[in-house]
Image (cartoon, rainbow, N blue to C red; front, side, top):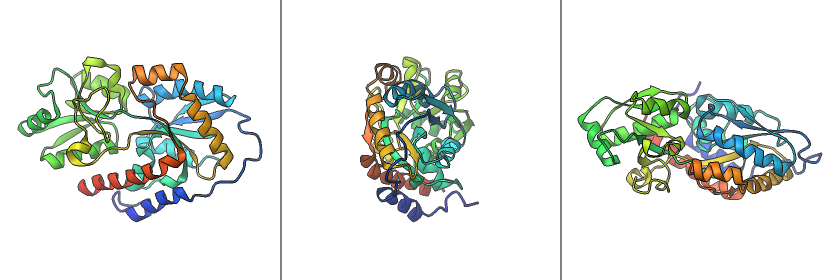
Length: 316
């Protein structure tokens, strides 16, 4: 097994660059789709992704004219579900809905059976509202106050949802000279009661915190910009020059026929205007409805690799 930090950056960047030139089969042999499509969610039920997927699948099946079945395959910070899709037939009938980091981070830090170019990146349909959060009853109300408090009170803990969130919070600790204790949780569905119940001091959230209004306190944004719902909280990009990949992407196995990819991309874009999907996306989760097509995703993926490498190098 590879050391978690020894996967060649050149190899990963080379794989990402290959996205621009990756061959896909020229045409599907039959009219697509002529049977149900499976939408894999690589995270536990109850989190933001699974919540969105259930509603989005209904909108997507209206566009495709076939059932879209949501299949939850959690584990490994998204790697279990991503591996399943990467190994699935490249026919468009098995696609993945995940935060983009699940397709980039594991190949850079683990011995997994896929790389970024194991997929056709069809589209991004939103951006996860990733944040460092606490609760209003804590003595720190801002990011600066949190860091000052942590320096005076060693041993604070955080809800640990994945290797990626752990790496970013540990990156903050190294930069600021503070230490945190990770408390494992099984995704957003378990993180919330841990935080509200006082079992942890702070937590990373992929956006589920926005369902809880003033019960949650946003201290910082992990995205490249401040979050629309929390404009006073700074982004890590402002403070440290790094950010966590935030795009919610739909991908298919590499080699999926070009006409199938085109049909899926068109259907995904149209499904984004569904009223029920927009209600849960923009009103309940407070995520943006921001469609990005396959061509525009290529440079975004390359930038993700560069940013994540900075975190890896700093937390070795």
